[in-house]
Image (cartoon, rainbow, N blue to C red; front, side):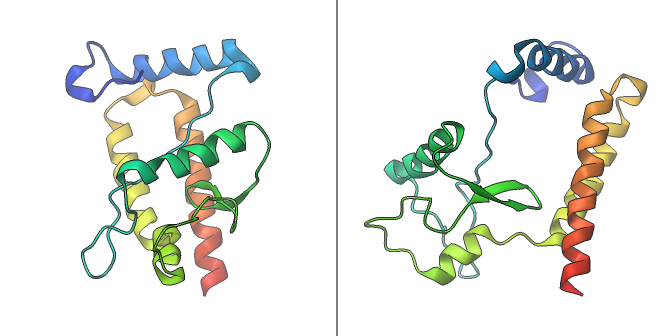
Length: 150
């Protein structure tokens, strides 16, 4: 489990390095990591995802993804469910809401990358190079999307 900064008893750079080494040691047996934002809101201020029991749907997709049963599309933030792979049966969610749910604004992600770089800077030479590399990869994906949109 990962600790939140106020509850971590030692330098976060050391903490991240520990988890990266553990991932190397586990190799292909390492757990896969997925990220969700249950609290994304639409222009009307309402949550885009229904939440509660429906949160099992993205988890089901993640499990099926790990099992190789479904694919994904590459995006700024990583990989997202392909159309039709996320079980939406019985949900009252419009295509526009679904599009908004999966929309990734390259400008906002650029700001987030800058904030992450500022945060990482406080760890100096102790910051694992893998994190710097991941941030550089994120910036490349952002730049590709910006170039494609211009």
